[in-house]
Length: 381
Image (tube, rainbow, N blue to C red; front, side, top):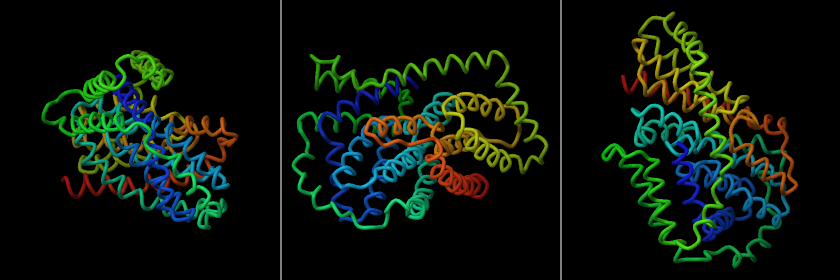
């Protein structure tokens, strides 16, 4: 998991040097045609798409400064745009194995769930949830001028020369290497090479062809504190496992599942996992929770008849990913966004995030629950 994040951070860091993300943001602005709600939907959608194939923390690190710059030029408050991007980054990141840290943890701990499996089971659910959430933003952020025209829109269009690819040669190198990396992820069922190795090989190759004499500069883009946080977290959770905490949680969950008839166990397990994971992840960062619960899921599937690893694994993924939107401390991407906003004098408090994040979480988790029950109880069965 750490190697996968490291590799993707290097790849994205090099790509950021080309100005590609600024160009993407400006292209989105032009498509908004002066409409604030259209701009919000487009920025949030681009963030969700990027978060599906890059980790969402890295996506937020790249997109938030550009968004703040756009909002400052337009003379509008950045809050609704930053909130929409962050909420959709957690939703969009749920679509793939590499998009959200909980997915990386689940994929690493449950090798039965491949990159392709995440695309098959998670991506359609994300596509189902996204339109409803984007529509809800118009209601949630109506008090922030969303729905009105952008009065300074034409001023920003005059700055189009500032938003361009600054290094086409490096940009093409990034696109070729990223293309092969994503292709490697998609072909995992055929070659069975760990996605972490693919990301590391891609990062190494890009560094060799682009900046072989300045490796140190390229490595500055890596969020070392995030990697150290993950490493310490894994050590801590292994300690909890040795103390028997994981076994206690597994026994409680197992007792609840065994108390219902075998033909209803998977339904109950899906509902409990999705909603329990979402609510707990909203107020306890979803990373340590996922590290603990993925072991519980593996244990329960092995001991309780009537359950499948796909149903419980993806229920945990949806719950942890979507639950991260419940509060400011629910996901690492939320904290990163708030920190970047603070640097630009945009204060986002715990309660201001809760006011908009928690309703979004409830809506998305409700849709995800229905989707999972439909897939695993009606279609797969």
